[in-house]
Image 1 (cartoon, rainbow, N blue to C red):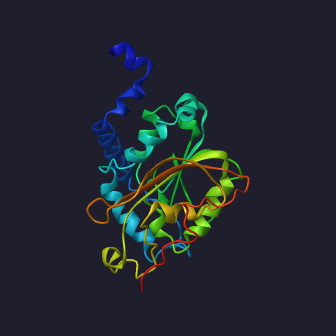
Image 2: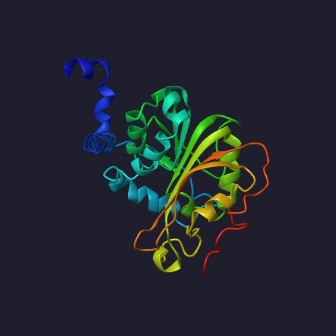
Length: 253
């Protein structure tokens, strides 16, 4: 065991409790320095109302939420991802804390190939930026993760265009969210958030560029609210698949 840990200390990150403790303690250590968390100067123009403040407040408990693992596990079941994981460049949009970063390390992604982006950051792994205007060059990433973030956009089609721009041809996209509507969203976002309600809605944002769909989980509303799809992005325009809706579910008034 000691030899293994000397050679591959990151295997400890395969344990959920270790990831949670490390994410929580690193956040606490940063807070103890008294330095302010880097953040955007204001809420993004295309972001839901108060999305920046809401997620900054949620940061305090997100280190204990190992939810990203549910998105990363099915991605790792894709043969070409598992085979080349050490060489793939991955972008994690909206990780909040470092726990999603640690899960990627646990599955074999190399630290130098992991980039995070959020509205704020205390971590060297996470850049500060807006998902509606990604600060990265075209064709930069082999995998892009958007875990529970599309709801914070007023214009998810703009996010989809930016993700398509920075992703490489045949990149794997993993997108998830919880089913919601006006009643669930409440007053925080003042009706400006996007209500994620189906995989069809998500796939429609990439209409004409959806290749193989590796995974999809449609919700049973409140009983089983998860919406998740993992698919291949093709740069070459394709005819829209018959199974993909032509438009997103409109927000309720």
